[in-house]
Length: 36
Image 1 (cartoon, one colour):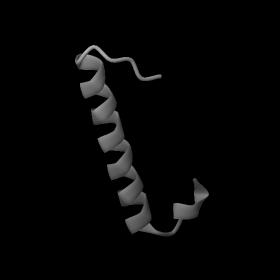
Image 2 (cartoon, one colour):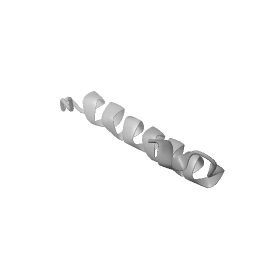
Image 3 (cartoon, rainbow, N blue to C red):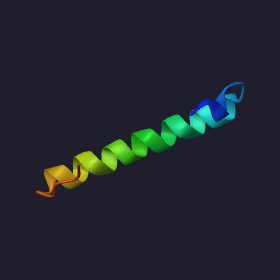
Image 4 (tube, rainbow, N blue to C red):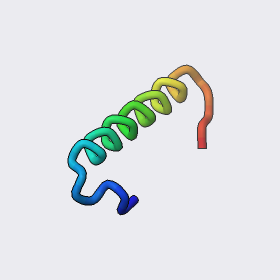
């Protein structure tokens, strides 16, 4: 969202959260689960 514009810390936090979420989805998929 645009709320992080001008706030590098907010952008970094968002990027970290997105990466963690993506890794969790990949791990779950590898375990035979299906997240849409």
